[in-house]
Length: 156
Image 1 (spheres, rainbow, N blue to C red):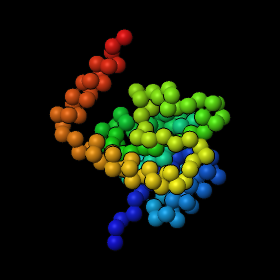
Image 2 (spheres, one colour):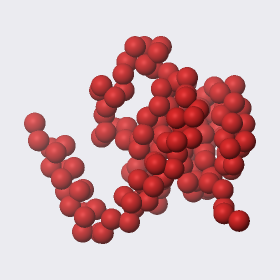
Image 3 (cartoon, rainbow, N blue to C red):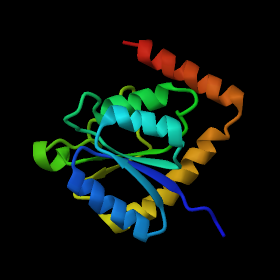
């Protein structure tokens, strides 16, 4: 029997957490949830999930932006795939895809709320596969990419 994938959902909307947890469990995933960014980071460190679904705009001390930044800067966690989720497109009329900020917020994929659940189900294996490929890159390639990113951030 194949092990089911472990997904952590971090969102400050408890109704959304319940809905997403129920939906993902019914589709065969092990799901853990939290409504707080700081607790989310702790849960990620403890559980080492296969994927994180992360709300960007949370009204907690640690927003989704901060959670993503901490995960990406931690060598033990940086390869865990993250799907960023937000209603800012609908609420603030901001299109993340139009103005991405990969230095501060670098999810593997992004979905607008309300989440198209069928699209999410199609996206999960794609994002995990992409993250696994990234993780298996040779060390020399990872170092070269770090150097390129550093040079790019220093250029005017």
